[in-house]
View 1 (cartoon, rainbow, N blue to C red):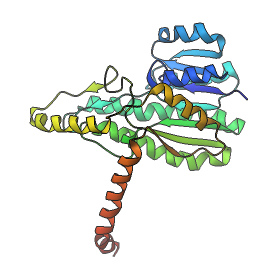
View 2 (cartoon, rainbow, N blue to C red; view 1 turned 180 degrees about the vertical axis):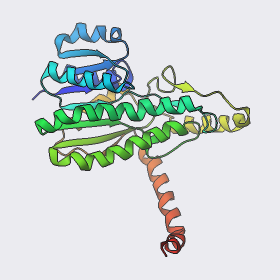
View 3 (cartoon, rainbow, N blue to C red; view 1 turned 120 degrees about the vertical axis):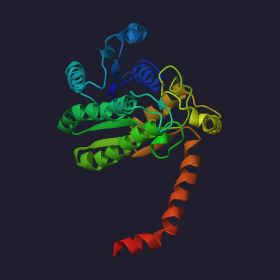
View 4 (cartoon, rainbow, N blue to C red; view 1 turned 45 degrees about the horizontal axis):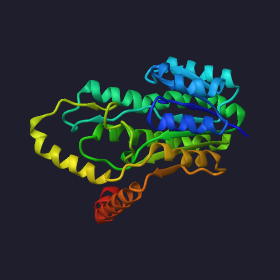
Length: 273
């Protein structure tokens, strides 16, 4: 049976690739973008099965109106994809208050508003799947993107709690955690803090580390096949990596964490009293 999707950030990258993949197999999509002109070719190709919606996810009232409009237009919502977001580059000391708040407004609160707006419809119909586009940077953290990491860690936290809260209503939640993909995430869509010269030497080192992590970027269009299989699963996972690199990064990181906690267990027991 065909599904109805609500996808934020549908103008490029994952959002556009997944929108087209869903439409190609006969599903319907409410595709949100900042400028609906970016979807003119998609509308011309798929007609009324795609509903272009102008939306800034930072605007809570606009988000609720957009979700309500999509539900009224298609009659139901099956898959809600929180894909809108961007990367904020800069060492933690360099990021301004405005930049930090803007990062959280989009990456955390934008996803929260969409999720809150969709849940009443999903609960009423007794089904639904919320896909939260996180990152390998949502379970690990890397120099020069610490505020971005913080936003994705926040997304991971509320989404894990959400999964337990809505399971009895027949609603699934999945955190998609991609590694490096060939999108404009580090390019046109990214924002950069004003550099502090004190970090110039380390900035070069951090860039080399990132280059090693993203030695072979994934293909956003290829990721669509994984998303379709994910939403068709009867028992979708809470978390799933996209790309080949994240598993190795996570394994090394979590093994280090566990060892650190074991090594300091005597302090944990001392603190217990």
